[in-house]
Image (cartoon, rainbow, N blue to C red; front, side, top):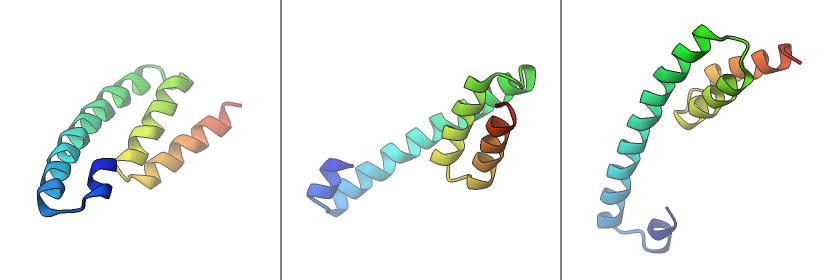
Length: 75
């Protein structure tokens, strides 16, 4: 991102877009894994925190706020 912000040109944009696509794919895979883990152990706060982060990165604000509520309820 920093490289792109220094020199915003089409080539840099194409590379950035390609990399973001790869990263988003990894976050979706991680989401599936952590959703399964959370199903198996719904009280595990680490799983909830990871899921919240993943949801925020994937712009799933509604799901992230659900994770916030779960964290608040466990205190």
